[in-house]
Each structure stands twice: as structure tokens, then as C-alpha cells.
Image (cartoon, rainbow, N blue to C red; front, top):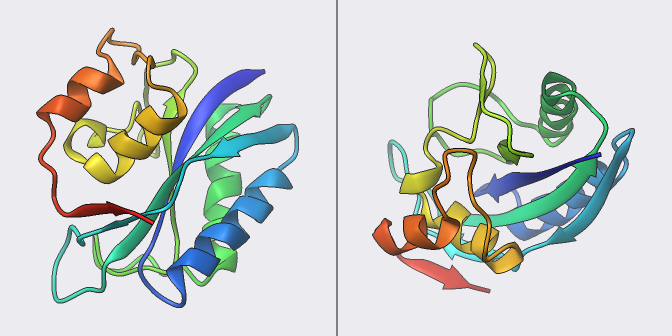
Length: 158
């Protein structure tokens, strides 16, 4: 089993319910156990246009799935929740991102892990640190160090 962390975000169609429903669906993925989820956080949108605030969280999983199999499962959950892939960083019903997959460094056309913008996103770092305060990325960087260097960007624990 590989321990991994998945970021969840939504800013459309009852975002808190979208995240709760996504967690239920993640728990049903084959060969995967949902271990726990961080608190939910409200964050300012990162992206174009006038968007509603996001609700974000991080889930900790154990899985026997290969990284791309997990990605396929997460994207199927996004689709089932009405995710449309149009404008980059646009408003969305559900966004699920593999943040960390064990200590693997993955650089595939469809998947980069650790997530390439992890260090810039306090709405990912804070819930990740809530779950695993001593987490170190494959590069050796600590989540705590990244969190200290990241701008606050109007983050509120719900």
C-alpha cells in the first residue's frame, strides 16, 4: 500500500456537499482506503474572472493502485460531479489533485507529483500540514517550511 494525499476543491453547486460526496466516492475506489480528511477551508479563488470562494480540503489515502489508475479514478469522480474542463483555473464543481504519492517523483504528461504548484497554495499546504505536520516531500522539503514561505491569501478554516 502506498500512502498518498489528494487535494479537494469546489466553488460551484454547494461546494461543501461536493467535497463530502467526493470523499464518499473516493472511499469506494478499488484497492484504496480513505484514512482521513482535513478540516474544510474557505479560500479566495485563484484564476480568471469573478469566481465564488473555494472550499478546499486534503484527504489521506492508502492505495494499491498505480498513480495513473488513481488519477483515472479521481477524474471519473470529477466527471460524475459535473466537472467540465474548459477554462484553466476556472470555476468548477469539483477538483481532485494527487498532491503526494508516497515518496515518488512522477513526471508524466498527465500527472506531475508532487503537485507542481503545491508550494504556492496555502489552501493545500495548511490542510496537508493539519494531517501530517512532519511530512517531507521527495525533494526533502518539509511541509512546514513551504507553509511558512507561502502567502496567506485569505484562508479561513470552517
